Image (cartoon, rainbow, N blue to C red; front, side, top):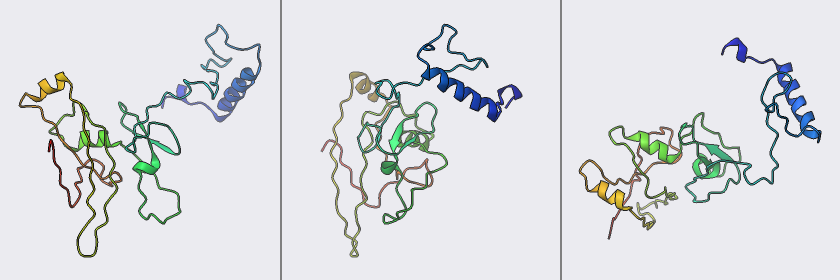
Length: 197
């Protein structure tokens, strides 16, 4: 970093103290100077926690809940930056383990992972949001519990016209949420998919 961007600890402490002092003083609401303090740093007053525009975050989680509740993790892709519930996307190695979950050094949501998994396809659109399926138990005799998921989704007229062209296709992908290799497909051992029937 250039030296002009380096700020000493004392300067940061002074900025924070000045900001909080000014925020507590009713006479110093918003000045015409563009909210700059004596040191020339721009500061904005903290928003009231009851303010409806307090958090401008985008939550899209495989559980389907779009509320920012509990511990959250953000996608590292700069054009995505969605937030997801840690309990939904980070699966602990042992379910009985009471230790805190270890977060990955970098995290990508399922849509960003799928778009990078196959370099020969470019994702245009996601007509159906991801669905999370719990793993089924495989019995000692090799049998397993069959899980059914039925989803319908509308295709716009523009999408239908696009799919008539040979270079476009609808694809279904499956990934393991907590895969150590993030950008690959991971189909279950036993899978059966039916489309339109």
